[in-house]
Picture 1 (cartoon, rainbow, N blue to C red):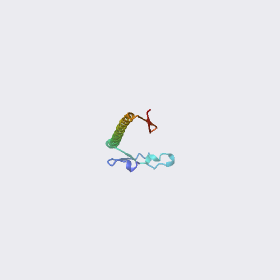
Picture 2 (spheres, rainbow, N blue to C red; picture 1 turned 45 degrees about the vertical axis):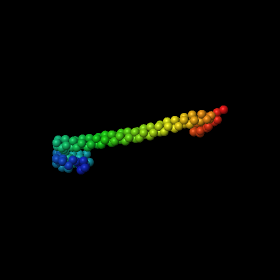
Picture 3 (cartoon, one colour; picture 1 turned 90 degrees about the horizontal axis):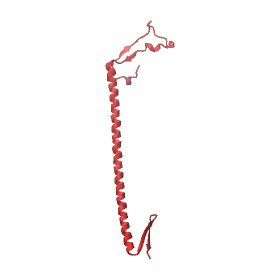
Picture 4 (tube, helix red, strand yellow; picture 1 turned 30 degrees about the vertical axis):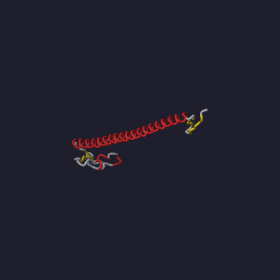
Length: 128
């Protein structure tokens, strides 16, 4: 018999008991003992309903997976946009720093000094 959780609630089951030709219970040692166990069968209409239920569950799972993928893609897109914004801000800051540094070099060269940067160290030399 099937487990009760596997049986759809609307199933109209028909018990089939083929039995033996003599009508006596079969001897389990002969290997025929399973013949006397009543089997549950679904009518064709119940088969269609059962398959429809299985397909509905499968399509729900598919739609859920697809929605999760779309949601994950949106999150990734948002993360990429945040990173893009951060990089853009960083680039703007670097360009401002470069302009400031160029102005400083120009001002120092007007006074006879030279500005160099080596390994993040600023060196100022007097030009002779």
